[in-house]
Length: 266
Image (cartoon, rainbow, N blue to C red; front, side, top):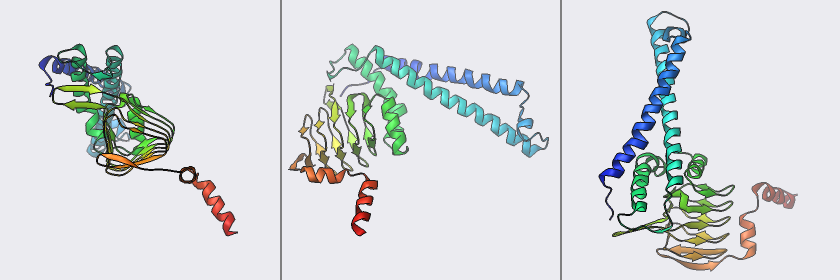
């Protein structure tokens, strides 16, 4: 297993802690100073009253402005630096050699992911639509109408088509960490694919359009699941192929289906 050494830690602290923190603090200070200088003192914010309760209400409001400004600026700065960092020195597809430049980049990248992204995205703290947006921001290629109720490691190595869905507690893992080996291989998911709850999709997997991966399955590295196929198990194995009628029924829009049902009733 690769060890994260001192220099990547120092770079992480400088680029992703000190720099965003200093910039965010400066902007928050500037904003609150501007609020006070404009006459919006805590007493004025507290409904222009001079009593103690209103004064402290105003003070709390001023503190909230500072905290929200700091947090927003910090997040935007971290994401901006992260994107620039990976644009300048992107992680490669394939194996990463020990003591190489790519390994150094991976160490810094891993620290950023562990500190900022994984605690939120792996803990089901965000609504599914927000999770989708977060993974797009972090580099995943996501088609229209595709959502993730599970988690994705290394989103920049994941490509998902239109109308696909991953179930609760599912996990897409594009990286290999086996002993001293470290590598990344893309995961490609087609259109209208369902990955069942609790399933794990490992590096280098390709899943064709209209395929289904059953719940609690483990799709082994490099597996190719064909169009319309159903796979399940640990390791996942081919179960059967869906016919065109089954596929078409699965994706009839609810409004059209409801209208057809009403027509038959009449």
